[in-house]
Image (cartoon, rainbow, N blue to C red; front, side, top):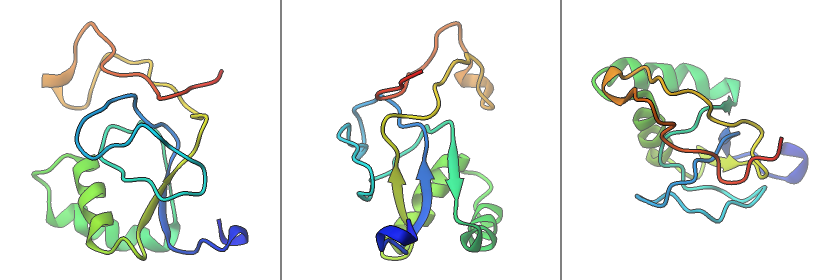
Length: 116
């Protein structure tokens, strides 16, 4: 990212879900900030943002982790930008969630454009 002149990133979403709700766009482009909403299965974090992000998580224990990541990144998008990778590097294959209410016999969503 730095080699491309983008030093404002906080996270790279390696799995973009194929859902069309909230602010989550389906038009993901490499090296373009992505309006992260939720539900990623794979993330790459910039290490110098981790202490603040973990403190934010600690201070907001009642929210799901992906909601905290979204809210933290939106506090200062100029220094906490989220980028996505296309094609996706990971695919969601599980039917079980860390939230027991969301576990089911169906896979909730798949990636926007996974290429095995």
